[in-house]
Image (tube, rainbow, N blue to C red; front, side):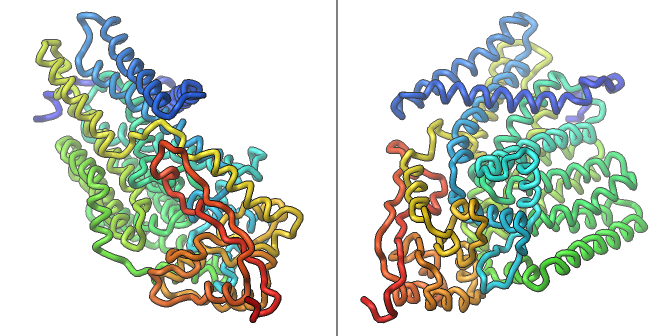
Length: 605
């Protein structure tokens, strides 16, 4: 069906400040409302048992879900439209789920130690390196670097330093959640621009409501636990979403207005994205392909190619001048050493099927409008990004590489939903059949939230015992130079004394699995009893991070510890809330810790 049969002709686009800033106002309102509701949930659950807390939260949110569309219908009475009532319900649903997310994630965000996932210690360690003037990349025998580019760490440090909170671990995580909110806002702008390109004659009914729904739903997608489970952690994931969705927005801008300024921004975006996460360089391929197929100017294609190559090359040259060969080793060579499993990539595709379905359905809806040939190029770019991210997840067991692509899929799906909503819900009439049809579609979209993984149980996932676990670790450092004690993961205990600690398990584990690591440095330091104390997790387990059972070649680190150190105590593993089966979503570093001290001599029992 053509767009003209489902939309009404639109008068000239209003140019008021309210119209221009409508997405920003809606986004701020969404975050503010969700945070306020999250606070209400926290107050409501205080002092209640787990089951009672969840039940009371459910009743509270159910009342909101019923009240929002009911208020609209009572206000409009006979002139109420089924589609608007359904959209109001979905908006309330998305904001309620976002409130649960903010309540849930606060337990992680305000946790005082950087041990929630493998990247947090190295993220904070890079910030510490920069603040004391230590090279971000050093020879691999030091084991104090990881194969991450520095953009996210440095920008996060800058923002937190400006706020005067550079010593606050929660502040670094708050910034990550802020990145996710910015990504959702830019994604909302993408939804608006796609609709304008595909259906320029469409007059958006309830435009402010769509802006609100888009922002809330896209923020849920930007933090979903299937493909964006680390968005709140000290990791590059959240900022990578900002970079990728910004790159996509620039492509849409170029489709609408192919100016030299936008083309220059696209050139700059390639190295900027790379310094946030290496795989963002795929936008160079996307831009090149679009300009070659739909750009209609070989001159511009040549200029883009030459300028991008020159700027990217210059950026890498500057990094080499700063850090030398170690930069190439950690950022480039390490990536080539990873064994990629196509079978695992396919498994991850099936795990994230809902986002591929969203991208396909959104494309079907949007490519029926105008500018379909140009929008096809943008859609293919989104598909390429998601497919490439899915393929690269074959090097690991988590799906977080797919986060930016899944957010782009959400953009296409939600824009497509808006393009068919009025027709599908029968918003021009108000008969019983129209209300039934609108209700059925509204319920279907609400159920999709589950497929996207954005529905969480409103319980705090971190227990009080986790804080005891952190205190027990800190006690082992009291009154001693931090530089003489090796903790396998976690940098917060070294922050006050400004110690750059190497020989960490994430760095060694990354290279041990690929079989490309040189561990002579740590082996010699253990043999020389360099450390007065070593704190290691899973010391007697097969998945010991310094010598994992899946490694093709043993590192020899466990045996070196056994030969030169004796176990003098243990720190009990942290226990989770009784009502939560797997209490922390990714409890990488909450297991039992063995406390090792040097033997009097190498032959001591």
